[in-house]
Amino acid sequence: MLGTVLRKALAARGVEILQLVRRNPVAGGQLLWNPVASPAIPDTALLEGLQAAIHLGGVNVAGHRWTPAWKREIRSSRVESTRALATALAALSQAPHTLLVASATGIYGDRGDELLDEDSNPGRGFLADVCQEWEDAARPAVEAGIRVVNLRFGVVLGPGPGALAKMLPIFRLGLGGRLGSGRQWMSWISLADTVAAVLFALDTPTLAGPVNLTAPQPATNAEFTRALARAVHRPAVLPAPAFALRLALGAMADEALLSSARVVPSSLLNAGFQFAHPTLDSALAGALAPAG
Image 1 (tube, helix red, strand yellow):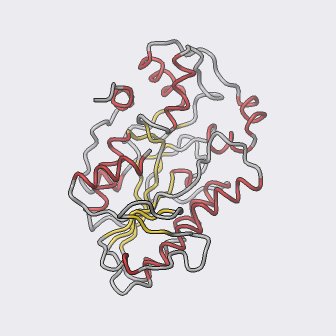
Image 2: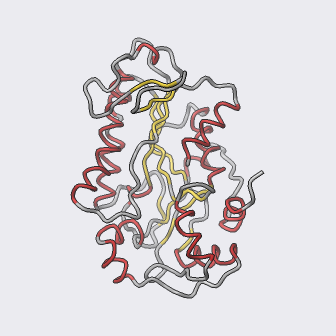
C-alpha cells in the first residue's frame, strides 16, 4: 500500500526512481536483487550516485498465526534484507546521502499508559527484539557516513490493502467491537500523513535515527472502535475477548492486537512537520472518502 503511493508521490516531484525487484525486471527503472543471496545485488553500477534509498520490506505480522517458520520469515524479511541493502550501499564509490528504512512502534513493546517517544527505551517481546535487530541491521550504512532514518511506523490508515481493509467488512456489517479490554493504546497515522512524513524525512537533513511515524493523538482500542463505527454509521457492540483472540492467533494476539504502545511523534513535531490528519475522525474520513 505505502510503496505504491510513495512511488507516485516521488514521480510527481519529477524524481527518477530505481525500484529493486526480486523477479526479472520487466520494465526500465527496475534492478534485480535477492536479499538472501551473496551478493544481494549482482550489478550495483546503477546504484552509483543515487541521492537516497528507501527500504520498506517486511512480511505482514498480523493476520497470521506465528508458527516458528513464520516468525523466522518475519525476522528475515526485515533484518536480513535491511542488512543486505545497507551493506551494498556502503560499498558504493558514490553512496547515497540518505537511507530511510522501515521500523515499527512494536519496538516499544507492551507499555500500558506510558507516553513513548524516540527517547524511550525499547521494550520486550518478539516484535520488540525484531525491531531492534531491524534498526541495527542498517549499521553498515551508518558507518559509511550515510544518514539513516529508522521510520517507526504506527498503524497506517488508508485505502488499499492495509489494516483498515481487514477491519472494514466486519464493521460495515455492524459486527465490530473492541479487542480485549479495549484499554490498550493504538498508535496510528493516516496514509496521506505517512507519505508526507516520509518525504519530510527525506528532505530534512537534521533528522537521523529513530523517527516515530504516528499521529500526535494516539487512541485506545475502544476509542478507535467507536470512531470507526461512527465513520461507517454502524454500531460496534461485539467485543472480541482476549482469550478468544489468543486461542485463534496465539502469541500474535498478545503482541500485535492486545499490547499497548502510546507513541507520539516528537521528532517530527520538533522538526516542524504539520499533520493533515491529526485526529482519528479526520484520518478515517480521508481513508473512507470516495476516490477521484
